[in-house]
Image 1 (spheres, chains in turn green, cyan, purple):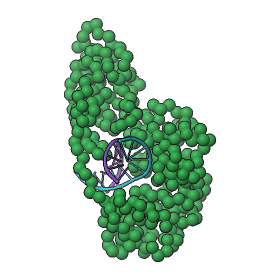
Image 2: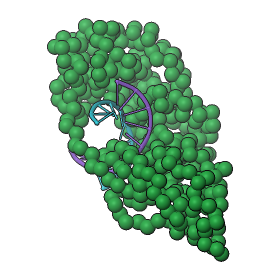
Image 3: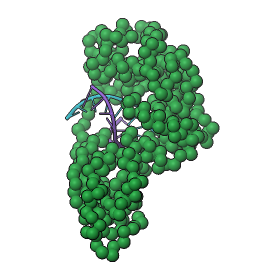
Amino acid sequence: MRDPLVISAELLVWYDRHARVLPWRVPPGGTGADPYRVWLSEVMLQQTTVAAVKAYFERFTLLWPTVQDLAGAEDAQVMAEWAGLGYYARARNLLACARAVADLGGFPATREGLAALPGIGPYTSAAIAAIAFDQPETVVDGNVERVAARLFAVETPLPAAKPELTALAARLTPPQRPGDHAQAMMDLGATICTPRSPACGICPVMAHCEARASGIAADLPRKAAKKPKPLRQGTVWIGFDAGRVLVETRPDKGLLGGTLAFPSTGWDGSALAAPAPADWQEIGIVRHVFTHFALDLAVMQGRLTGNAERGTLVALDDFRPTALPGLMRKAWSLARPETASPATMRHAGKPSTNTP
DNA sequence: TTCCGGAAAA
DNA sequence: TTTTCCGGAA
């Protein structure tokens, strides 16, 4: 690396003109970014695109303008508002973190202090420290890894290359405007130094890029071979009873932890029984892909003929499919509440209420 | 269909 | 250190 300060200076000149305008951002050169908004946006942006986050960010900040407001929210409402964003452990950690920050009287202003909070790891702690508190921390996300791998032609495959890329990115971090530098690196990666077909011709630091000089920019960063995903199967039951539908809240730990769901089997063929007696009929199969496996889920629909052993019946008028994670929304899209077998098919004398 | 992307638990 | 956690875009 010839002169890191020249590279960062040229990057900041570009950022001053081309910074993305985002709801949680202060313009280039600005100060006073709200740590709450920076934190909330960064947690939402973990493993999630800017486009997907925008609407959720607006909704959360409308409902809960301050971290104290969020700390006082009901768990179920936060989970319902997060539904559809994925990686639901983030939502549970978000609430735990808000309550910890409220107890502390505000956000810690250092990377170390921030990293001690739930859901805040190396990336998010550095990002909040740099962007909200102007600390000279190095922020390394997927964009920064890619930019550094190309600028310095790092051939080591990820994730083994991570420490090397972090060290190179640290040398690039300037003592002045570290927050803008971090956001400039990420904007460069998101808009120009993209994973496929990078726009090297308009890159503000192309003169310094070793990968471009060797013609291998689009091939970096290299990645370790990924292992194939197994296909698993399971069954989900959507039960109706007198204008109500049977749902449950999944256990906090594990897949889709803490989300609203229809009762289902485990995902490895574990032979769990139906949650209630009913005239179950298969109405289709939905396929859903998780990080490390794909799932074919058989969807059963039926009208209850007895008490449910799992779940709670909620009125269809109060049932909001948007509170479901993607997998359960797919299953729900197959259901036909109005054509579920009519009440006249039910056993006479069976109670229509039940308590789990 | 493949690729992309942070934190926590194991 | 490896594995477990989703949904959107290319």
